Amino acid sequence: MKTGFVNIFGKPNAGKSTLLNALLGEKLAIISPKVQTTRHRIKGFLNAKDQYQIVFSDTPGIIEPKYKLHERMMQSVKSALEDADVALLMVDVNDNWEENNQIFEALRLKVPCIVVLNKVDKSNKQKVEEAKAYFSNKPYCKKLVVISALQQGNLHELLDAILELLPEGFPFYNEEDLTDLPTKFFVGEIIREKIFELFGDEIPYHTAVMVNAFKEKTTLIKIQADIIVQRETQKGILIGEGGKMIKKIGTLAREDIEKFLDSKVFLELFIKVRPKWRDNDAQLREYGYF
Ligand code: GDP
Ligand code: K
Ligand code: MG
Image (cartoon, rainbow, N blue to C red; front, top):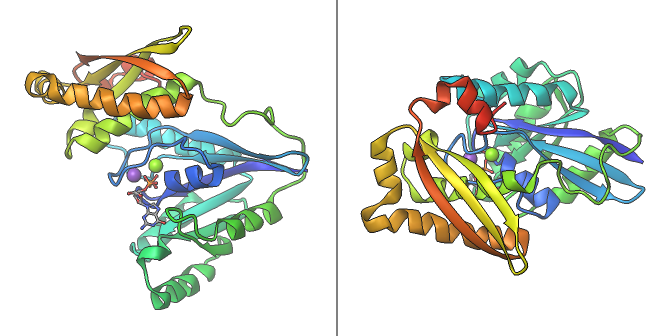
């Protein structure tokens, strides 16, 4: 059977997390129109018994690190560069091609790369043709596939291209599993997604989420999580007038967690102020940014 690591790279907002979810048919990675939503490498397994196991990795968008959290995020990109069997280089076709090209060249990948031109639903035929011509000439481009991750367009062609490049081997993970990350991680991510959804520019980038308790009772799952911010003023904004905002985060997150876990959930949220957590090694580790 075919097995291997297929790692997705690209600029922030290229559509990497949307693609991972579309390929797996399950929402593992959180999505937002804001950059730097994804902070971890997230693995998802696509299994077809005795035919293939593809270990996909979504990665944070490639950026210049400005604080330690960013450095951690780029380390997770680096780890994904090192173990890839096939790399998907993802471009928003409407973005600046040359900028994307420079990033891809700088990755210096030695494994076969598929350039994935995304968001063609938002583009036109001529532009797509030009982009195809531009990227297919590049030395790193083994194959090129045009897709819409959002509308799940052309994913079969992408899957075929991947399978052609994957080596033969034995599965790395249990074929029943979808991911190697704990449920708690995804619960924290869903809460973080709601913060990205509800708050403007600044707040989401100052926020981390830590799930402290996850207890399965007979009829529901009890979850307690902390939302970590850097300043008292941010805590005030997250709480909102009369607790309006924190309630909203709680309700939206609970609904999605219930869908994800297929169970009733009781969710309790606390907000904690931890000045400069984004630059503190011990706190970064505590919040899961290794
Ligand atoms: P990432 O930062 O590369 O992980 O990108 P995301 O998956 O978070 O997507 C960034 C934004 O682009 C979100 O608003 C997505 O809904 C949107 N997006 C992703 N793929 C497509 C696509 O194929 N077409 C369109 N129109 N939007 C897309
Ligand atoms: K994003
Ligand atoms: Mg992402």
